Structure formats: structure tokens, C-alpha cells
Image (cartoon, rainbow, N blue to C red; front, side, top):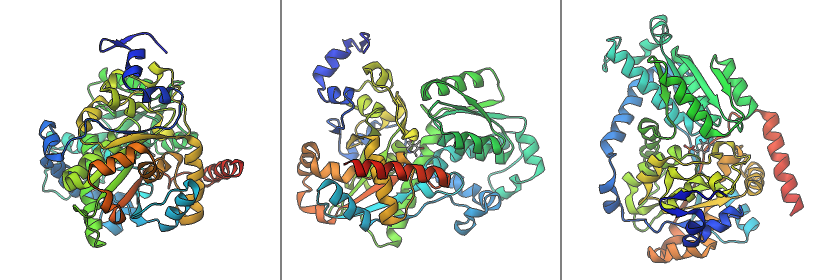
Length: 455
Ligand SMILES: *Cc1c(COP(=O)(O)O)cnc(C)c1O
């Protein structure tokens, strides 16, 4: 561990103030509830983003829907709206109760962003949205398009030729690159994806097959982002999608919340003071889960409780929120290696923008071992026939933690929810998986099987 000073204090002093950090350094699992959590009405006053910003993002996606439907036939059924199913997973709930010996009152649901069309992960929200916004900005600026046009005109040589004069760069652990690469290449942009060492080979291969330039690094995600940023600075026609700071990415993710509300309405599911919603979101740098959580808070306010889920080896957001140091501290500063098979979550330094935005709105955060993610991956396939990538399982254990950890029970009690847990909906946000090649999914399954057999 290094002896640098963080906001006037050495790391040892931070660990004395927040003893949970010691467990995190040991890469033990932790469950943390947020001492800065506030009522929605108080918290929202301090945040620069509003419902209007989210509405604008929703409208932009609607303008693009005819184009999306035209170029991605898999979205025709939803008229060009990129959305995922939400399902009850009663069988998996029983499995979890058995695995961890913890009763789970209420219902367990899965939000299947793993099955979002086009790129098969939560990044099909933010990543694709920001590429579309940039494309629209350019076309409006050069009078190629007006907001009242049918955007399906963008599928043609004229626009491809136009966008080929511009390029897009991004740094990624894999899935963001996949979303941005696929969308940018489809529009005609040149696209450069800077990939960290965790990025899976199949994601790189797929991107190259779509015409993206993949630049590989022998180091982690932060370095890939830094190099992407540097590359774009030297070229005025190159646009950098900044996963660590982008408001546009964040707003693209926020849109999920209104869509979920609609799905709930169609299923006759109410979220109100008697029917509380608990959401568990796998977290890397924070944009995806942070955007979704922010959108959900705007709609369900104090009746929704959002928790971030991270690997024990990459607990950057938990550390940043707990200490308030946010992007000023990395897991490596504490001597944690940031090595995890949950490649979507292999991020050592959190987004300061997201951490500060969610500082008073997030209920808590926890960590989970790779072994448990693999074990749940296998059980999810056995019990529900749903194939997820390891990262996407981090959220699934959330209700077990909330209901069994002292800090979780305390949270429920202090919020006066003890008598309401029978009505609760626990929702795990499944963030990726449907594009994982069959052979690799088989290997994941086998790993889960081996881990379960060893126990
Ligand atoms: C990117 C990703 C996440 C987390 O999103 P962040 O914006 O990095 O926090 C979670 N799961 C998967 C599968 C991802 O690809």
C-alpha cells in the first residue's frame, strides 16, 4: 500500500476511520450502507441533472427509432426501441435460499439487459445513446438533417460518406467498446476502441469483424481510457466517449427507468409506500448502474432502494463512496489487484461524476467473490435457463446480503420497512451475457460446477 496523502490523511488513517476498508483490502466480502443517504426531496436539490434532461434523452431515442428498426432488424418488434425483458425468477430465488440458508420474503425479479438487442449488455443503453447523440449533433450542425425528419434516411450512402469524415474513440473493458464499435461502424464513423487487458478475446474479434480498430493495452481500464482521451485530443474530428465523466452516457442509462415503469404498469406491479423496490446493480466505473439508479430515484423516489454490486478485487465505487474520495482513490492505492473474471466490473478507479451525483441517493454497496458469481451463473442456467456473463451475477446475491447482514437488517428497520418485506420486490439487474459465444459459456458453467462441487 502506498504512503501518499489523500485529502490530508494517509491511507492508514482512512482505514482507522472506516474499518470496513481493512476487510476490503483482505478482499473479503463486505456489505456497506450509505451514511450519507438522504430523502429524495433533499438529495435531488443538490444535483444538476433533472427530469427534463432524461426526457430529452428519451425523445432523442424516439427520433432514432425508425433508423434503428431499419438497420437492426432484431429491434423491429419493438419499433426500433432497444429494450429488455423483466421477469420473475422464482426458481432461482429458491436456489439462493438453499445455497445461502436465507429466507427471502417478497419476490425476486431479473432485469435482462443481458438480452438487450444489438450488443447484449447494459452498454446498449448509454453507449449507443451517446453515439446517436453525437451523430445527430453533427448532422444538425451541417444541415444534413432536421429534428422532424424520418431518421431512417440516415441509412444511406450520403450519411455514411458524411460520417466517414469523423471518428469516435473510447476506452473499455469490453462491452462499452462493443456497443460503441457496433453503433459507430453502422453509421459510417471510423471507430477506435482502446481495450484493457481484461477484455475478452471474443469481444475484440467481434469488434474487428465489424470494422472497428481495436488497440490493446497490457494494463487496466483506466489506462485504456487515458489513451483514448489522448488520441482524440490530437484530432478535431475525433470524438471521445468519456466513460469516466460523460453526462450523455449517464442519461442514456437513465432512460431505462421510465421503460421499467411502463413494464411494471403492464404487469400490474405497483411500487409505493407499501410495495418497496430493491435494486441491485453490478458496478464498474459507475455510469451504467449510476444512470439506472438515478432514473429510478426520479420515478420511485423513496420507495426504491438502489445498491451497487462489485467484485471483491475491484471495489472502487464502494471505496469512493465510503470515504468520499471518489475518483481521487483507486483500489490499487490500497494494494488491491483489480483482477477479476467479471471483466465488465474490472475497474480500479470510480467515476467522480457518478459518485458525487449518487452520493446521497444510493442506499449502499457490497462486494462479492468471483467464485460466488460463477456458482450463481451455473444455478441461473439450471433453474431459469438464463445465460449471463459473470459480471451480471453480482447483483443476484443482493437480497441475500441485505436480509442477512447486520447493516442490511438495520437499514430495513431504520427505514420502517420491517412489516413490508413480504411485499418487497428485489430486482437484480443482469447487465450482460447474451452475446457470449457458446463454448465460452460452457467453460463458465463448468467453472461454476467445479466451485459448487468443491463446497
Ligand atoms: C459495464 C458493465 C457493468 C457496469 O457498468 P459501469 O458503467 O462500468 O459501472 C456491469 N456489467 C456489465 C456486464 C458491464 O459490461
